[in-house]
Image (cartoon, rainbow, N blue to C red; front, side):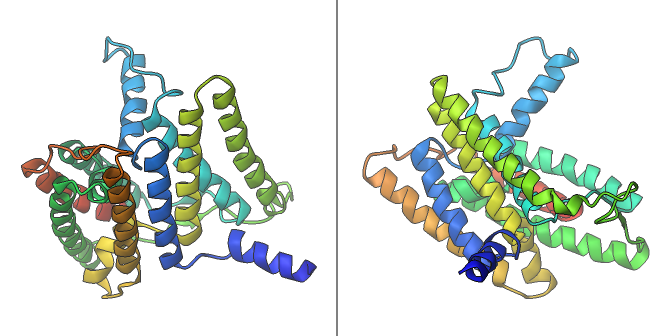
Length: 303
């Protein structure tokens, strides 16, 4: 029995998950999150954090909303929180240093991601995944832009590899550190402390009357945990059909979206959510051009 428990623990918390399993779980979690409070999204939380940064350095005169009681902030924080805990438990967390050229590309690609998300009214989660789940036409329009942008981005990367090949990056040493301490031994313990800290935060929110916000934080943590365990990446879904012809990740994303669409439709049909919930007005050129810029940026940034 002890060996069986160890094998099960290793399969769930250490070994990588099948990408199709992750896609199905993401679809289910998307429905749970929408049922609890709101659809899954990322860029809204980043925007609020940036608002506070700009307010702090004096660029904004109006104080933004609280990062602790905003659902956008809570779900994005939960995403990072859950992924961090999962990486520690699996002993996959480490400091890795890419080549200088990759750092520059990440900065430019990240800027394009920001521009694209602003134009389209959401990123490849809120503007694509959750928008399609809600049957918002803007999500389908952004999909066209994402496909075109990913294709253009891949063409650029091929051109870059041919003319400016980059050297491999460096990774921080695993295992024993400079003083002989093996961090790998305590990484799983630290990971569980991180995840339990998330549950403690939920209880803190609950005690202060913010149960909805605490639940959104837990939903975000679940998304982060799932994405980390399977290396589930939307960029791969748009890149691989043009790059390798491999369809496992695109198939997983399609199935995930189908599950989410059915769940959202049932919630709206039953009256639990209104028909127009998360149906946005960014269906025109904004979603198309924003999707293209975002698609190009996520290929340039590497994810």
